[in-house]
Amino acid sequence: FIEHGILREFSYIDQDQDQDQDQDQTITHWLMAEGNFQYLVESFLEQTASKIAVEAIEKTKLWAISKADVDKLYAEIPALNFIGRLLTENYLKKYEVYI
Image: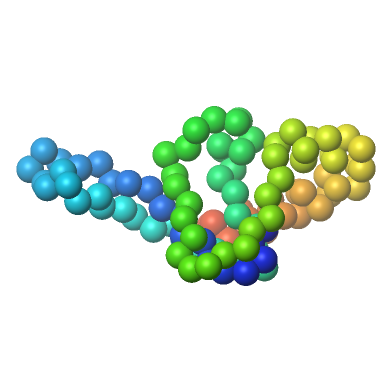
């Protein structure tokens, strides 16, 4: 959860052999501002590395939770499953707007 600040979600563009390999080229997927949740869905759910990166582009305060802790909370407080679903639906709606 982004309490304060802005995050940039991006990935690196594959370089052709003719391009200068010293220059990293990236594509920004989106910017997330305070009051939003940010997570890399596949990486978080599957617990795998992602080709997508996230960086703070200004001073930022974040709140984080592990997948294990989310699963534990869902088991202990079933109503949180509903809240998690709503957050995921909201994330997917925002994503659809940007593709």
